[in-house]
Image 1 (cartoon, rainbow, N blue to C red):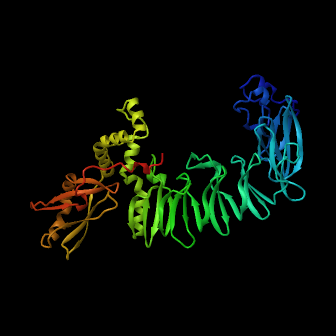
Image 2 (cartoon, rainbow, N blue to C red):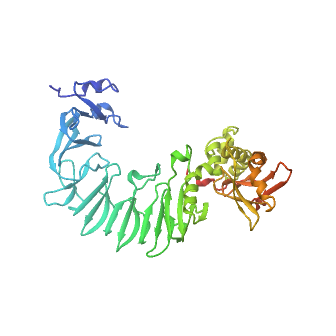
Length: 481
């Protein structure tokens, strides 16, 4: 098959028309819609494939066989064939090959503001250095590094080693983490934390066996004094740590304490979407203390209290989003957007004013509690009668849709056999008149009365409901915006 010298001329002239089709070739990706660059300057660049094994970088320069290509600037493309790298540069409207078959490992990497390439390359002596697109050493940069680790070209950061110590450099040849650490590695790829743009790449750094955190903006988030560290992508700039031989705590970048150093273990928890359903979910932490565990939010509030029953705790954690009043209200009323009965002015006002926001939320509470109760109970709620404790003369019972609690109702021993025998006949009526409240962000039974066919009544009043009026949404910030 013969190829014209300027494969993309027709595509450019009819911009933004389709790339020309050629028999046996498939367009893999096209790098032509670059902001601020006109198609006439860009000259049309794409990756196309003729087989499953080979890629072709085709420009106005002509088709070039390669394994992969990287567009580094509006006038520079790097491609490789095996371990050999080459460069194509645009000058005076023409593409020219300025670097051919360069034997290196760490290019392509990035470019300076002027469009000139700055690439880390391993030379014949085995050391890495900065070169330009012509293969010449970049003035003002170190002449060699002993070792490099390029994390991702999209991150534009790489770890480098000199004199046995590690640091990090950016694609414009700046040292962003001082070369003074025993170990340096990137924590979060693409500067993203839980889907949010963090604006900075964070590096773990180790010095003398202790860990800290540095940013590629030159900041030191945490000094290297910790025995262990981990970053949590669902909580931007939050770090779980422990001092050497000590307890675990949590801090924000800059050192602000989130959780005190009093836990035997801390780990983030990601809810199972297939169980939790759609909607926004809270950032949650499993906190261990002794034999017990608790579920905390990102500010340390207990979403589920400490308990040593591992099976019960695991079940409650799994279904927590379904059982949480805050999660329900946040998603049902979409509190981060304008309400159905809010004017635009009222919405903008409450976004700026915490008191207005609190007032708006308070106005929703009665309806929200009613809707939440109905949603939890559904149409298949039922009472479950458990064993009888003859010593305390109490039956244990529960509501099948309320997972966290089992209740006790006093029934004298003389009435207990008949109460148990006839329970199925009066349980539905009792459940229909039961009352509920929100306890620890979850539905709980407030009161219920059982009336037997013989006319005897047995009542339960939950002492934890004393003084309760309405649920509070003050902790709705457990949902990460």
